[in-house]
Image (cartoon, rainbow, N blue to C red; front, side, top):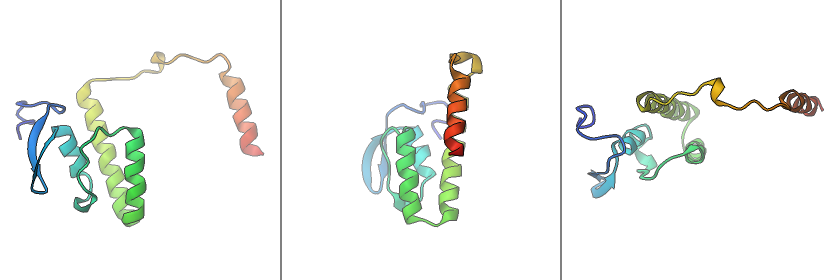
Length: 114
């Protein structure tokens, strides 16, 4: 609620009670953990792409396909929300063009057909 009223920021440290213990975390981490099943445990670290991969792999081992699908979709939606509120945008013009692009693609296509 404090975040929606703009009293605290997504990455601002806050103290909350998680599983009966006082924990320093952020609103963003709370939002992320809300997307995970309750029995998954509280993740209080910055989660990058490799962390998402570990979470999904663990979920595949523990939950049904439908539950994993829901987890992935929930994390994806949160990611879109985060990129929207951050104001960051990416354009094709932000990327450098590789002069050998066509050669790379041709070589990759040959490997696929082998």
